Image (cartoon, rainbow, N blue to C red):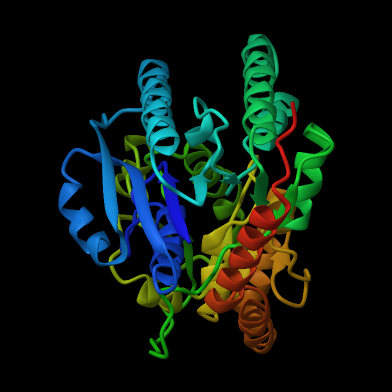
Length: 392
């Protein structure tokens, strides 16, 4: 098959964005049996990374952009306009090119793409209405007005984009049901994220009482909020019980509100981008994912599970993954419960090891690269065979 992949983020083997790494691995695997073309946004300074993609792509269509350092309302508007420009660019390629399938990665990439003769598959990654809805529920005062407007606009955009697609790929049964509640009649299939792509057979000594939160921060304010929530609300409770506990905030693009913390608290480290994710996961004693408004598949949780590091997260963090709380990971939704779960893993090493072993097995059974690619190719065949029109 001739497949055009439209990716909002540059697919890279070493990516600051978890989804970018996943798209890279899927693209590489598909290229073994199919002819792949790629349209992708390329940040200033990233163009050299395109060379690593050329062995897997028949052709590459880069869309350059310049990213700013600070996140504010003006910067968010520039990002939105960039998304719109990229979507129009990709839509033109899809309309003119000779492809069997157009696969759009991330909902935002489909903003301005029109339905053409070529079947279009939307790989949603995240259901963008869900965090907007949760942000509305949690907002108060004048902020509720802004959150309400954001929710209405995001919901309308996601319904429209999904409705133009021949097939929508969701990452979990939960996300599938949410999408169907937004727009009944959608053709939705579940194809989970592959996990553990950076995990090897290497072993590393654990750093006693080290707590890790690893995420991409530059474009994900929800991850910044999660780190601040853990530091302000949960970490002090842990240190009351375990005074030498250390909190490591790792990942691409931490803003000043995170990087300033170690200057006033030597129990916190902010590392920035991590080159060796395998070592980073395995050296921590506990991985935390205090997800407050997100959802879907949190790839970093799965990676930590694959690495054998016990995980504590919220119900939102686990809802798309579907792990069994108490068996594969621990779940807590309030600061006291979250702190208690982390302290338990510190103090009960046998229980921590048992949870880690179950987590590794859970990831192997449900999120391997082979199973993900097989399900994706079956989805292609179904769309081409049925030729179902998108919803009006």
